[in-house]
Image (cartoon, rainbow, N blue to C red; front, side, top):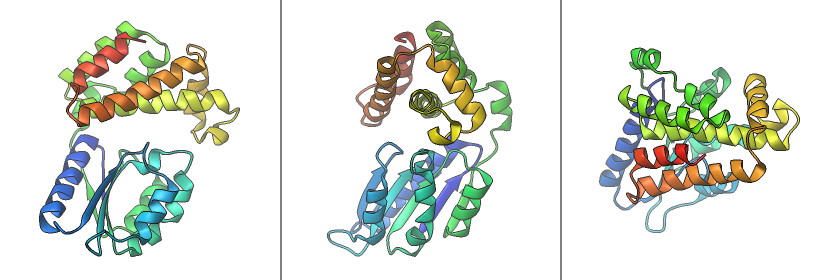
Length: 237
């Protein structure tokens, strides 16, 4: 069973998905609850979630955060959607952005689909992809000032980390592939990533990726201030 959360307001989508996850914990205390972000998800984990049962109950409730952003296994994940739908386990699934074919497959196989919108004016006030340009150019001062501006325009640290991680991952993929298809990227994104790749050594981009993942996890564990950690990351480029 899949509960899907999407829409133009990704912050609200995450909030609603997280609230459902908490509510299910209260309603089903006997179930096993698991959470996976895009870096943690894998095909083998999905196979286990489809067929496994909790230790003390018949149900597992899994919170899947943007699994389709995994370009390397995106198509394989989509092939498993019907199995996820038919599983006795519950999947709370949130995605920041879906293309038409992804949305069709997911919505057709979801028990419920909640779409969060209403942030159009905010998006006009701040173009979050300006962050990827500054990061790609390795302009740390510009990136830092843009992050500060993003906070004042209502952008969350989670949104900022997500778009920076996407750009860093795109650059890393473009360094190892010669075609957009091979890298799992759209042609425009691949071309930009290739250009930006000239500004980073392999070690530098891999370090940036690891740092962004570390910031995400440390912030959610309450060990660092998410906003300040991203500012420090920008200035360390």
